[in-house]
Image (cartoon, rainbow, N blue to C red; front, side, top):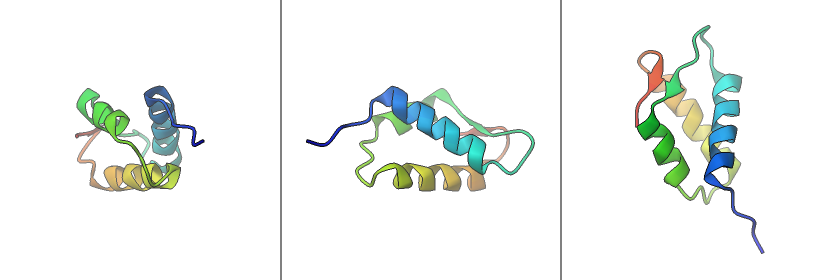
Length: 68
């Protein structure tokens, strides 16, 4: 049996990756829509897939927020 992450766990893991990979003093944070999109995704590729998405989002963030 494969354990599935809850949306709360996805939110916590995403926050940890944001803090780990942010390179600026101000960490861009996801909007409510962006968080909803992250939590709605199934993440079949495991936690590394989520980490890659967070890294890309930080690269393309145009300010202090990450848009969906």
